[in-house]
Amino acid sequence: MTTDTASAARQANVTPRTIRTWARMSAVAAVKAHGRWVIDTDSLRHRISLGRRTVAAQLAAFTDAKSAQAKAEELIELGALIPLDAWRYLAVSSSGRDGYVVDTLAGTCTCKGYVYTGRCFHTVAAVMLESRTTAQLALAA
Ligand SMILES: [Zn+2]
Image 1 (cartoon, protein in one colour):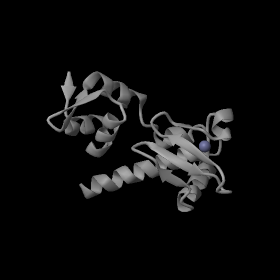
Image 2 (cartoon, protein in one colour):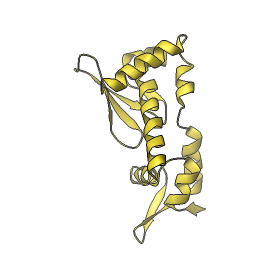
Image 3 (cartoon, rainbow, N blue to C red):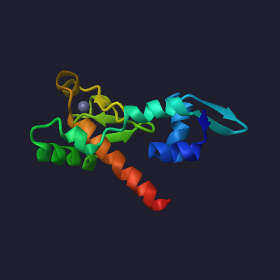
């Protein structure tokens, strides 16, 4: 079974633009026919089940969720998160010397904090930023 971009976007609760990016990057199985993406529904379902991690789920990993949220807000205000593509962000360290890649679909980060503890403020901040962007896109539509 296959579906189109608009329907896939509704099912995945993302924008059609995100679906096109997923298709381009092979995050979902898709072929282009007559200039339109035809998306494989099984692969879309799998992608949705991997799930975009919610802010709440990210915060649940911290014993002090409130201060984790505040730290994440700070990162956003500092502009420490740069969107790389539909769901990945580059997190810049406070020294500006290091960069980590945050994957909001997998809920992972390449920083030491995440590698050792399975949680970090970058993932919280990225998911927060992403949910805000999605909300803004929904308002604009
Ligand atoms: Zn991190």
